[in-house]
Amino acid sequence: MKSSLFTLALVALLVPPQAEARRIGQLEFTDCDLAQPGTGATSRFECATLEVPENPDAPDGRKLVLKVGLAPARSSEPASDMVLFIAGGPGQSATETFPSAAGGFARLREKRHVVFIDQRGTGEGHRLACDFPEEMAEIAGSDEKQVEMALDCLASFDADVAQYTTSVAVTDIEALRQALGAPALNVYGGSYGTRVAQEYARQYPDGVRSLLLDGVVPPGLALGSEHSINLEASLKAILGRCAGEPACRDAFGDPYRTLYALRDRARANPSTVPVPDPRTFITRELRLDESAVAVIARLFAYAPETAALLPLLLDEAHKGRPQPLLAQAALIYDELTGQINHGMQLSVICAEDAPRLAERSEDAELILGNAIVGVTLNQCSVWPSGPVSENFREPLASEVPTLLMSGELDPVTPPGYADEVAKSLPRSRHLVGKGQGHILLSRGCTPRLAAEFVDSLDPAGLDTACLDVLDASPFFLDYNGAAP
Picture 1 (cartoon, rainbow, N blue to C red):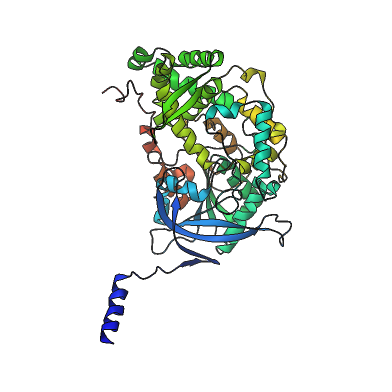
Picture 2: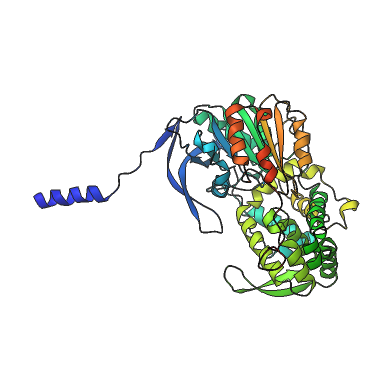
């Protein structure tokens, strides 16, 4: 008997006690590991679930169980006004995206919980994910192939895909806020998430204490309509900077001209190139054609680190060595396609943007051309269109304190978009990161400025001099990096 008691006592010492669940409002959060797709990495946060009707107008119908994540505050007495993180895309899962973005919220978490919920159509249990082609070039197949891809995707779902628009999704955010005890929220949205944030503030103004809009999408913008001209402006600035620096110009001449020369060659003589996969080292057959060059240029312009590689990789490809360019692009492409739930993306874009999209002759000869518009219109021709709220495309007019953030060289949401949105937000301020690309929060002192803004609700009072040190990454002159 004594031996048994001793054994039980020893087991009790060796086995750690289970952490108590954290209860906030009606939700019970327990420890969970959140994965970053395609990396194998996981991060420890806390998770709960929230049940909502698929169709808010039919509350007794089919239900969706949405995953909710919590990055707890470090303070023992957190402020009641939480930070809400909204992912971008459209099509990204918040619980899959937040771990890679968590560094930007470190200062905000000193005093406040950060909460995030998978937008309907992303995440576990209700994912509207389509199979992407294995290679970039396959996306630009024939019109019939693009329609076929959409129909195959649609047929794979047991869901009313019309109920996955932004206007419906914000009802889930309000359901979350009510389940948390109806706190005022400091709402952060990145990229497409800024559209969601603005729509939530429009429909539920009492739920918003402040807005942080990063990579800003104006409500009146049809997604995809200006991707071509925005990318062109970004590439001219990025590659023009190389041509203006003696060391970069001596190494690569005029990279902007090289880009178009490579595009023209790939258009006239597309080729298939055997490339060792950068992760597995297994040889992949990657196609270098006009569409691949466009996708590569666009993907590399998103961040200053990849933009710094572009002149070198373009020069190598133009000289007959496209393997490094294709290998690096494959890494980025694989990561992005692993994050995007394309069916949810179509439910958003086909309802909210496609009716106002049209190919433009002035874009035809630009690097991106009308490729995105064409694919969108083809796939939306067979995709059900869901509800869009009244005044959805009108500027958000609000007194809510707002901090807008942009990268100077953002190829998809340039700073002018945030300037446009700020016109109807009198208590707002726009921060622009010199030399930066898409999404600013993780850069330089921006995390501290965001936390100070949420504390004070005084965007005009922020001392932003610390942003002056930001600049573009130095160009790689060879595979060892920049010149010393």
